[in-house]
Length: 68
Image 1: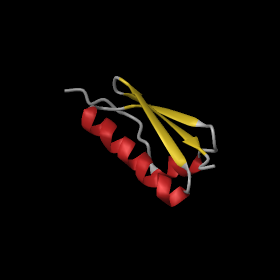
Image 2 (image 1 turned 90 degrees about the vertical axis):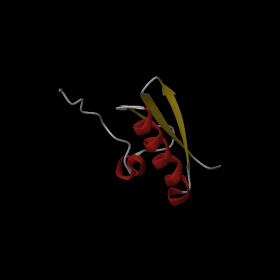
Image 3 (image 1 turned 120 degrees about the vertical axis):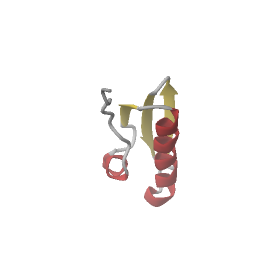
Image 4 (image 1 turned 45 degrees about the vertical axis):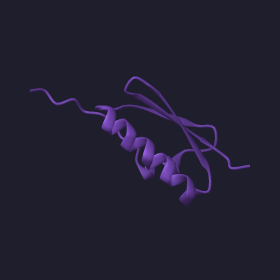
């Protein structure tokens, strides 16, 4: 069985984003998609910003915004 390699939304990658920037990753399955969304939403409080998540199938796009 061939295992598909996917990128991940990590805390490090989210911290590196500037306001208005976005990253897009291909998730392995629905569980992976929800897990990566949760990571982004949890980081909002730590980074004092807002992350918007948009999914199209298993493709997840996360955009960082200022809280103001």
